[in-house]
Amino acid sequence: MADHFNMQRFGAIDWKELRIETSGAQEGICDCCGTRTRRVWGVVLHPIGGIAAYFVVWPTGKRDHGAKVDLIVGAWGSGATQEERGAVSLNYCLGESGSGFAIVDAPNSLTKLAGRSLSRAEVVGTPLADQVFAIADAVFMTDPRLNEVRTWR
Image (cartoon, rainbow, N blue to C red):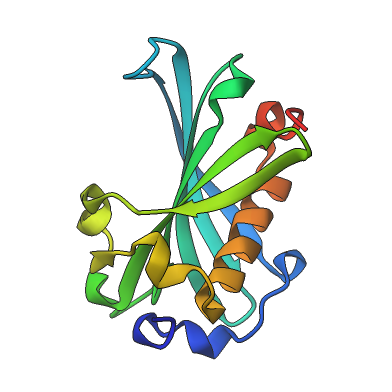
């Protein structure tokens, strides 16, 4: 799957080599619990080019609800098309042994930016999974707007 979205050109990724650029933020209300939510987004840059766009949403002040991460991975920049990108989703949750990411099925609503949404089974156990976790780590460790979420540990 990684080859389809031209992710092989990045090879193995260390989150520390990635850089983020924040783009926007928005407040809202959670559909399931009515809690205020915060949504932030931006882009992730690798030394050789754009690698992903990201969207993170979480209910403020409600850490047991977790955060949802949507990544649009693949080709970005001049001449890139949405067919060259795939959508991958992760949940960031707290467990008894700490916090962490879990890859989940990406919703079809993300196909406005990506050629297609990937299921968990299409990502887990592939080289793309390692890249996705590195991208998610870079976002969570370096986007200052996620300070609240980082304190959930």
